[in-house]
Structures are given as structure tokens and as C-alpha cells.
Amino acid sequence: MVTLAYGIFGLCFLVFFSIANAKYYHSQLKYFNVKDYGAVADDKRDNSEAFLRAWYDGCRWGGRSVIYIPYGTYKLSEVSFEGPCNDMMIFVIKGVLKAPTHISLFSTNTWIGFRYIDRLVVKGGGYLDGQGAVAWPYNDCSINPKCMPLPVTMRFDFVTNSRIHHLRSINSKNSHINLFACENVNISFVRLTAPDESPNTDGIHIGLSTNIKISRTVIQTGDDCIAMVTGSKDIDISNVTCGPGHGISIGSLGRTLGEVVTAINVRNCTFIGSQNGARIKTWAPSLSSVASNIFFGDIYMENVHNPILIDQQYCPTPSCSDQLGQDNSKVQISNVTFSNIWGTSSSKVAVTLKCSKLVPCKNVQLDNINLKYHGRGGPATSSCLNVIGDSYGRQSPPSCL
Ligand SMILES: *[C@@H]1O[C@H](CO)[C@@H](O)[C@H](O)[C@H]1NC(C)=O
Ligand SMILES: *[C@@H]1O[C@H](CO)[C@@H](O)[C@H](O)[C@H]1NC(C)=O
Ligand SMILES: *[C@@H]1O[C@H](CO)[C@@H](O)[C@H](O)[C@H]1NC(C)=O
Ligand SMILES: *[C@@H]1O[C@H](CO)[C@@H](O)[C@H](O)[C@H]1NC(C)=O
Image (cartoon, rainbow, N blue to C red; front, side, top):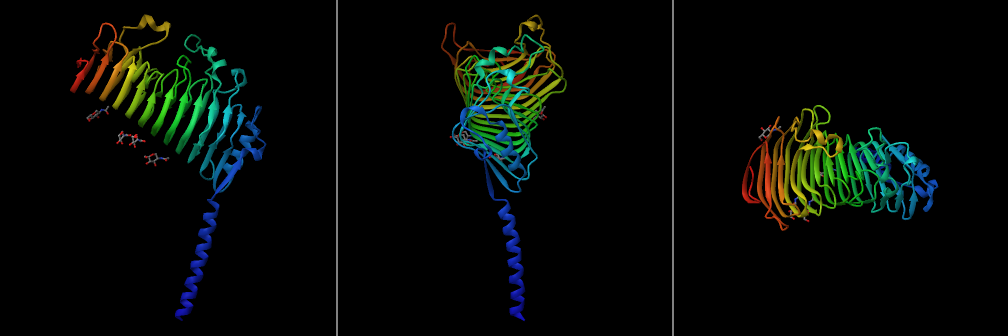
């Protein structure tokens, strides 16, 4: 009787185990090498069809899929990798992907898109070469309202629980990486490079996304290293080196009604020769919106033009210069802390807090600031307008709060 019981138990155990095993087997990794789909690394032929077919099979397979791009240089025209997929997708880029040069070869504003995917990993140490130089002269959006935005190198739309790491992007035509409607995405060990003078080449542009972490990343580009626009919430940025570039920026906000950016944490970052460091900017004029609970701390600045900057009169184009000084932003900025920020400013006014007369900035804290200016007419100064807040700890330049 006891033996029989053990026998039945054993049998059940075996059956259970083989079912579990079968399931385990299906969640094993399966490789989808783009070369098996006809990709050729000859730097000539377009590989978009091969890449898309590899993605299609990987996405539909029952287990975790590795879309594998081996070493070599692959020409790639615009592609959109779409989900939902059955399981985790791991996109491994070992080689170099090269974008078409001319914008007439694009029908959308994206070079490489990932959309509607849960559990995506993009990694591999490879390069994305946006070949921006030919396209940059076509970036005329500041003067031509009907302009076509240039394609973003890598766009993530509706991507959740995902990681992007060990990746390089050079000479993007527009932003290097764009996150829209993403949640729980970690970006680390990424290097984004474009010339100082390249237009609109944001490093990482974030909108309508929550719980995003960016760390151990080096960004040298022509526009913002990181830009957070409306709907950016719970963003953690650490160990980022920025410069050249326009800084780690919140905004521009207030172009549409009810924009919100909140819970932003920027720590342990370094800015070298960038135009701005820690920046919040809102359009002037602008509509009612909110930027709150923003922390910039433990930051080293080297030769940064505007190390600490709140600018509620942001209006870079000539068309709005006549409105400058009207001081009519309706974006409420509150609970902003700049803590432990040291180094050098390349302009005399190292700290600028230029808030709106309509909705003055509330609860702005300056804690332990040590910024030097070694140029003519020094030492460094700070400048405040319509701002309510406190300063404590060391204050060099003397606080204007
Ligand atoms: C992102 O990093 C955080 C903290 O290290 C971790 O808790 C979270 O699970 C990570 N998310 C993903 C998708 O890997
Ligand atoms: C900042 O750097 C310090 C030491 O270098 C480290 O202990 C800490 O965890 C870092 N913080 C973040 C948020 O990366
Ligand atoms: C940032 O760098 C410090 C020092 O290398 C390290 O201790 C910390 O864990 C890093 N933070 C992240 C989030 O990678
Ligand atoms: C600012 O901080 C205070 C105190 O922590 C908090 O009560 C308030 O809700 C915050 N404001 C916003 C807009 O989050």
C-alpha cells in the first residue's frame, strides 16, 4: 500500500516535472540571426526586410527571442519593430547599423522604431550611425512652420519593463533616443555622440513616460543631453556625463494646456563644456502647466555656460523676440532643489532663477553651491526674479534667494 502510494506520488511528480520542463523548454532562448534572413553586412544593400522578417518570427515564437545582428556594417532604411510579442524580445546589435543619408529616403520621423512591446532588451555594444550630416541643413523647424521633423535614430513608443544598455549612437539626424508612453525602462552604459553644432540632436528625449532610469551614460551632442517634456514622471538620472550639449533639461513646457513634469531626480552627474547644466525652461508666453518635485544633486560642472538655470522666458526663435520680457509664462514651478553643485561656470551669472511674474516659482532651494567664474568681470554672481525659496550651506556665488 505504502509502495503504491509512493508509486502514484512518484508518477504525479514525474508528470508534473515533465510539464514544468516542457514549459521551461519553451521559455528558452531562441536565436533569430538576421543573416539567416538574408541580411548582408556589405555596407550597400538595404537590410530592412531581413531585419523585419527576423523580428516577425521572433515576436511570434512562444519563448524568449534573441534577434541577433552579428558584427559587420549593415545599411538599414526605416524600420518599425512592433509588438505585442509572445515573450521577452532581446535585440542584440553587435554590428554597425547605417541610416540612409538623405531625408527623402524616409517617409516617417523615425529611423528605428520599437512599438507596443513589453519586456524588450536592446543591447550588444554596436553602433547606430544616423548619418546626420547630410540631413542637418534640412532642419529648419525654427523658421519653417511646415517643416518635416527629421527622423529620430531610435524611438520607443508604448514600451514597458524594458532595458536599453551597451549601445552607441552617432550623428543622429534628430534625437538619438526618444521615449514616448513608456513605463519602467532602464537605460545604462549608452554613449550618444553628435557634433556640438548639430541642430536638435537631443540625447534622450522623454515624454509621457513614467519610471525611467538613466545611468552610466555619456552624452555629447548638439542639443539637450536629456530633455523631459510633458508627462515625464518618476525619472531617475544618475552618473550621466553631458557635454557638449544643452544640459539636462525639463521643458520646454507650457505650449499646450495642462502639461505636467514631476518627480525628477538627477544625481551624480558631470557637465563638461555644456551650454547649460541643470535647467528648467518654459515658453513665454505659455499656458497653465506644472513642473514640481525636481531634484538636482551631487553635480560637477566644468566650464558650463549656465550651470543652474530656471528660464521662464524661453523663446529662442527671432519670431518671439518681441514677446520677450513680457514675463507671462503660466507654468507653475515648485519644489525644486539644487544641492551640492560645484565646479566652474564659463559665464559670470552662474545661477539664474528667472521665474514668471504671474506664477512665481515656489519652494526653490539652493543647498551647498560652489561655482567659480574665472573670466573677466568675475567673481560669479547669481540672479533671481519672481522666486520664493531658501538657501543654506555654502553659497558661492552669494545666493540671490
Ligand atoms: C530598472 O532598475 C531598477 C533599479 O535598479 C530595478 O528595480 C528595475 O527592475 C529595473 N527595470 C528593468 C525593466 O530592468
Ligand atoms: C552616487 O555616487 C556615490 C559614490 O560615488 C554612490 O555611492 C551613490 O550610490 C551614487 N548615487 C546614485 C544615485 O547613483
Ligand atoms: C553611479 O556610480 C557610482 C560610483 O561609480 C556607483 O556607486 C553607483 O552605483 C552608480 N549608480 C548607478 C545607478 O549606476
Ligand atoms: C511641494 O512639496 C510640499 C511639501 O513636501 C507638498 O506638500 C506639495 O504637495 C508639493 N507640491 C507639489 C506641486 O507637488
